[in-house]
Image 1 (tube, rainbow, N blue to C red):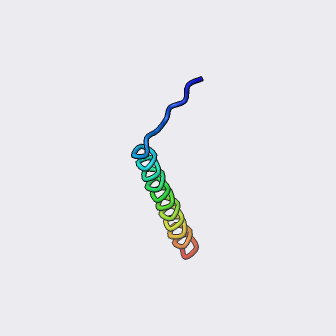
Image 2: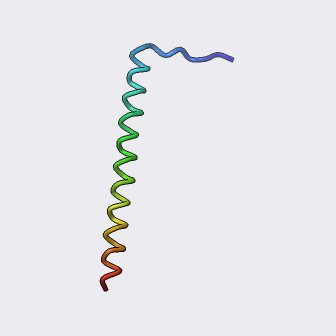
Length: 46
């Protein structure tokens, strides 16, 4: 089985994409959490 050898530039690029994707996912989790708090908060008052 052959494996693909990545260059240092490709490894650095992949690492950067992974970090960016992590930030995006974390941001979505925070956004959903805030929206959920707002929806439940408004539901309790009415």
